Image: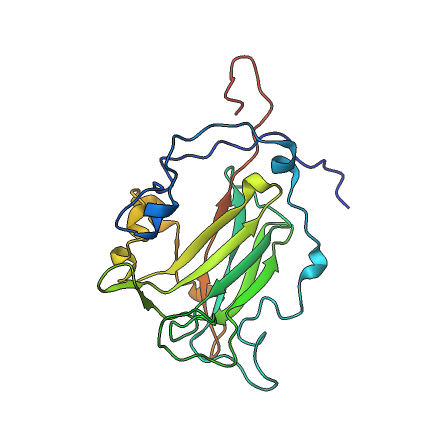
Amino acid sequence: MDNAKPETGAFYPRDRNWHPKAFTPDYKTSVLRSPQKALLSLSGTTSEITGPVFGHEILGEKDNDLIHNFAAPGESAIGQRIIVHGRVLDERGIGVAGVLLEFWQANAGGRYRHKKEGYIGALDPNFGGCGRAITDENGYYFFRTVKPGPYPWPNGVNDWRPAHIHFSLFGHGFAQRLITQMYFEGDPLIALCPIVRTISDQAAIDQLVAPLDMANTIPMDARAYKFDMVLRGRRSTMFENRMEGN
């Protein structure tokens, strides 16, 4: 048992110079989705800094094994078998325990299991493309899957999405909610992607690229990629001479 009290208080403000701009015409979807009026700054409410709450029992036995969680008995998903692992940290570099991660992706041929999918790539009947995991006391997570394939999308005449995995993270408060994507080291499509190009800071782009991690591969089975993610951290107690609170 741990007698340490949970952290409370406001989260760090979001750095909007680090994140991509909402209006980026080369990424056509952003034109209609971006705010049309000036943004307002509001203090976090109690529910925003104390939720969400979810039950850890929601996880199934194979939720972090996308190779088998939708497969028929004795079958497995088709593709390059990989392990994705890493830590969920806050902005101070401290591991965040008990974070719910949800992840989803295309199959090895670049096809999503979705009724409105427009790509003609083949479906894999043994691959559902989604799963979940919860971080341990040090913020560590891992899951098994197959490497997704790239696919074309109707943004431009010949735009292709790099191979990627989507992540949704639920931290200790709604203000820590994060939705992001992970790309793979060495993929030439990353630099050509209109979504990636909305990010002006190369260091920020680099944080979205998972390097190959040969030290954690399983010989004759699966390669490994390491991907750490950072959630917003808490402010420390304010002092008179340090009103920024940290």
